Each structure stands twice: as C-alpha cells, then as structure tokens.
Amino acid sequence: MTWKMNLAFETWKLECLIFCRSRSLLMLLQQLCEYKIDVRGLQKMRCTGSCTFDNGVRLPDNHRQTVYPNGTLLVRQVERTIDEGKYTCTIRNKEGESARGSLYITVRVRPVIEPFNLPPSVQMGQRLSITCTVIKGDPPITLKWLRDEASLKKDGDIRIHNLADYSSTLLFDPIKPEHRANYTCVASNEAGSERHSAAMVIHVPPRWKTEPNDVDVIKGRSVMIDCESEGFPPPRLTWRKADGNVPETYMPISSSSHLHVFENGSLTILDVGEQDAGYYLCQASNNIGSGLSKVIKLNVHVAAHFTNKFHAEIVKKGLNAKLSCQAFGERPLSIMWTKDRQPLNTKLMSRYRQTETVFTNGSLSELLIETVDRGDSALFTCLARNSYGKDETNIQLIIQEKPDIPQELRVTRATSRTIDISWSPPYSGNSRLLKYILTYEEIGESRNEISGGKIPHSNVKQVTILPSEITWSIEKLTPNTKHSIKISAVNVLGESESSNPVEVATEEEGMF
Image (cartoon, rainbow, N blue to C red; front, side, top):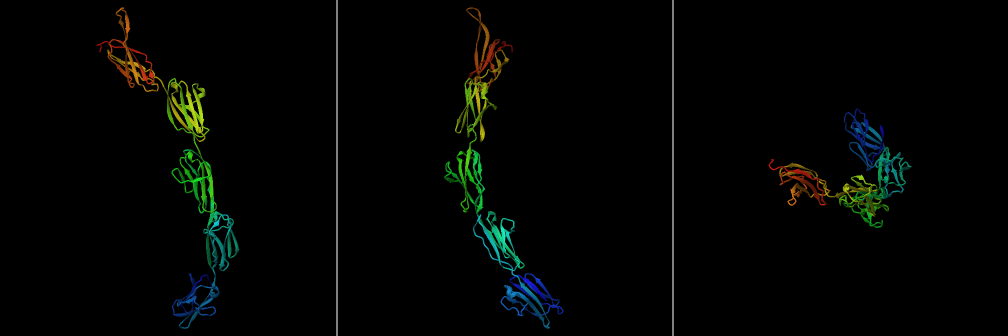
C-alpha cells in the first residue's frame, strides 16, 4: 500500500508504530504538524522494523536523517532533488511474519521573496516603484499587495504592474503625502505563503492648511489669527512682528499675557491696542524645502467712544450755556444730541446752536444755548457713531435761580400771644435752600400827640428759620391785635419774593 504526500516543511518525520491483528495490518496516515504512518491492531506484539528509500537504500544514509527505535524517521533540511521519492517501512515479528507500507513524498517549495527596501527619504512629487520578486517557490504563485494590512485596491491612484507570475511592481507617479504607509507583498502557493514589508516615509515640505490673511480688529477687543500648515515631519510654526511700519525687519514674538501662540500656530492678541497694529510674519519649516511664510497686516480700528461718560454743567438763569462733548474714533464720525432722550433739532430752536470741530482722531461738538431758563434744565446726551461702533456721554444741565415763593402759607392756631403757621417748601431753584425769612407785624393805629389825629403804627419783626422747617410758632404777641405774616426763601443766588401776607388777630387776654 502506497501513499503520496506533498511536503512543505523543511523537516519532516515518519513514524512507523507497530501493532498487529490476525496477520493483517491497518495503516493510517495522520497529519498533525508531522507525518506519521500509524499501524494499529488489537494485540501488541514485539516486532522489528526498518525504513528504506525507493532505491532500496536502508535509512538513515546521511546526517540529515534519523531513525528512532519507535519507528520514526526524521529528515532535516529537506531538499527536493535528494529527498523526494518513495519511502517504505517494513516490520517483522518473531514468527517471521512481516508487513510493509510505502509513502511517496513530494517536496513542494513555498515562495521566498527577495527582500526589498525603500529609500530613507522619499520626496513628495517624485516617481517611485516597489518591486516584489519571488526568487524561489513552486508555481502557481499568487501575489498580492497590502497597504497598512488592508488590500490595495487596483482602481486607486497606485498602479500595480505584474512583470511575470513571480514579480509584481507598485508604481507611484507622482508620490503624494497620502501614500505614506506600510506596504506588504504576500506571495502564496499550495505549499505556504511568504510576506515582506517596507515602510514608505514621505518627506513632505510644509503646505498651508489654513493660510493667514489680513485682519481687521476693533481696539479693545481680542483677535485670533489662524496659521496652520501640514507636512512631514510636522512643520514648526513661528510668528514675528515687523519692527516699524514697513515689513522689513521682524522681531520674534514670545507668548505672554497679551500675546499667545498656540501649538497649532494660531496667534491670539488680547485687548488689542493701537500699538499692536502692523505687519506680522508666520513661518512654517520642517527642514524639507525652503519652508513657507506669509506676511499679513493687522489693522486696528478705533470705534467711536468718549473718555468721559457723564458730567454736570451748572449755569445761572439768564446766562448762556455751552455744552461740549469730544468723541474719539476713526473718521467719518457723526455726532448728534438728544434732550431727555428726545432728538434735538437745533434748526427749529432759536436759542440753540450746534458747532463741530474735526480733529485727526475725532470730533468736538458744542451745543450753545442762549439766555437759559428753567426749561433748559435737562439731561443732554451726545451720541457718536462711526463704522466700527458707537458710544454716548451724558451731560446734566442744571439751571440755577432764586427759589420760588413758599406756598400755602396759613395759620393753624392763634391764641392771645401765639400764632402757629405752616407752609409748603418752594422750588429751590436747583440750589440748596439756606433759610426761610419770616416777617410779621402788628396792624393798628396810634394817636398823634401833636395833631391829635390817628396814624397807623407798625412793629415789623423778622425771624430766620432753618430750611428743614415747614411750621413755626410766633410767640410773645400782643393780645387782641391784628398781625400781618409773610415768608420768603433764600438760596445762594438770593432771596425769593415774599408770599402774600396772611392777616390774623390774637385773642383777648384771659379768653382761655
């Protein structure tokens, strides 16, 4: 009985395990990771055996072969020309009975790939080919390519050219950054497979991922200028600022609380000032090629604004008032006025006149009011606006004058010697009241001792009262006498007119 086998191992072993049953032998072939001839029976018997090659030569016959007492034949470093052929195992027992089994070994050679390597530095844009050649192995041979352990598609931008059944070439024309990968050639036949890999490292000069551009920013705000590049090795990004108003000499920028350069290349400037305006240079370099650079201009614009947000103007009644507001910002800059939040049209108001003076960094607007009166007391708002923003400042115009006459003077109680009065506080004239002046006098007649006629007599008295009071008691008066009472108010600008007099008579003595 003879078996044929394909052997793809450099070392193989045949085992002839001897068991007997009724003079007949059953031979089974098992393949584990070795080849065995296993003869099994129901009864174990002491047998002897031997192995021979097809030319009748008893084995072993060289240093690569070993026959073990258990019937195992081990062949090392298998060669097709020497080891391929028919092998026979013969067994005998003490009674002289014998049996033999034959096995034909066909040696198959698995593929062997000639190692290939890639240049240590592959430049983007160049041409490149990778050739995988199988220098040993039985046909038919199947060749395939893997890219990062995934099958390489034939319809991609990498061409596959098969020169022969044992050779395959990858063609790159041109090399692109996305071609960077690990390429593996796999060669297979019925005896096994072989693979060889090589990594493609593509040195890519910097190219813009986000190219910086000129930036406009309003003073006081923050700005981020993006500058991002890609390449291999990863480029290093740096920022510089022109020293002066001409993009010639640049000074390095270091991160601080005001300026910060992020790892991705973005430049951030917080609370931008006019001193930050100018030219900036972003550079990207990875020592491949000449590198990248871009000059951009940062324009800092000044929005319309006021340095002072509120103040008050005090003017005496009857004088002229001049309200001024100076707005700063880029021109053109417009200014308008409101009075108590209502638009003010000076063309329709005879006493109002508006003038404006333009400067390089802003404008001065003045509102002139002739012969001010109480109605001019108001909140005046100056509003400035330009293309980059708006702002306002408020001016409280206070017209001061003498106080008004105290109101509602009346008598609340009268006795023989006391009169109680009350009143309402007057308009203060936009100035703190200093005092009230109470004037009272007796109203009556006295006889002229020379002529004997009757003449009126007057005993005028004045009392100064604190401005916080609105009631007063006039004491030590003459009983049964008519009195005239009036009151006025005083502030820093003067005394008001007196109120209309109130006449009241004291009671007779002893009535209460």
